[in-house]
Length: 66
Image (tube, rainbow, N blue to C red; front, side, top):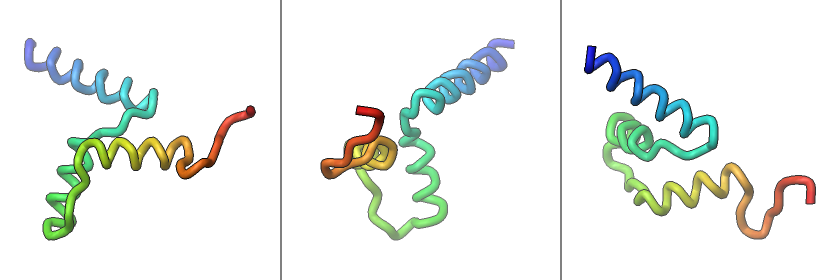
């Protein structure tokens, strides 16, 4: 029963992060290790910055209504 609650908590946490747009670095790392083992991997800071720029625009781009 406890393990089911822990798993439910993990799913809930992942769902919340996805809803607010926070990237999953651990998912990225697992993907890179599985499908691109020889390629360089971004640090958490690089990954977070890249995801923020992809979502909100970077290099002077402004999104939104104003």
